[in-house]
Image (cartoon, rainbow, N blue to C red; front, side, top):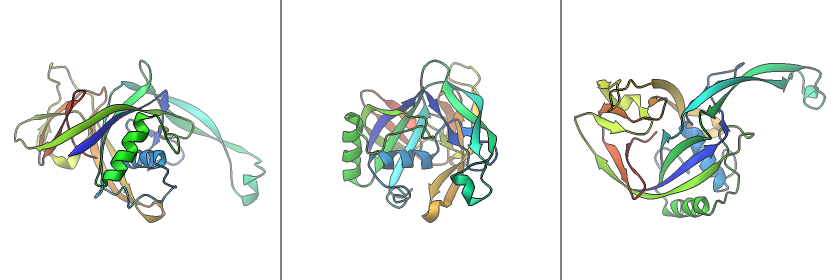
Length: 247
């Protein structure tokens, strides 16, 4: 399997949790739906037009944390809309807590692994990322948080299987892990900061959430040792050699 590997970077990020309402809380990592929307925008697809083209059956994505991040809470002013006329002539405002991800040292950085069954999409995306081009500029979850895609390279992916613990560098779907199949210490015996998040995986017509999954990842971006029910992908080139699982 051929993969494109690139980094998504920016000074700030906000990946809104789909179940929040009055408070805009953020996932610590971009969900699959966010990454699909970002890539579709880079390729020039119009809003809500790409869900079938980038479905889970055709498009495969994995993500890993590169930078350590922290959260800050800011309060933002929104227009208070109770009647249609308030869109043009707002009379009042409402304040909403807004969670922002920032890097502990420098930018927020995530490494993305991408494969699509259509070779033309693979070639087009590789060309645009390498040349720093985009039809719609990439951003980190919120239109105010512009980012960029940094090319890492193409890589080969080979499916592997093991009954032993395997070091996985990407976000791991919980339903792929065997019972008691997570080590809570890293290879150097330091305790891991393992988090669980429930995130949307795919949208359907009308931007309706089609599938939601729970995932594990290490807060500081360190690999996790897990025992898996299924195969994992060994990704390897001159720059990268990691084991990953798709979102």
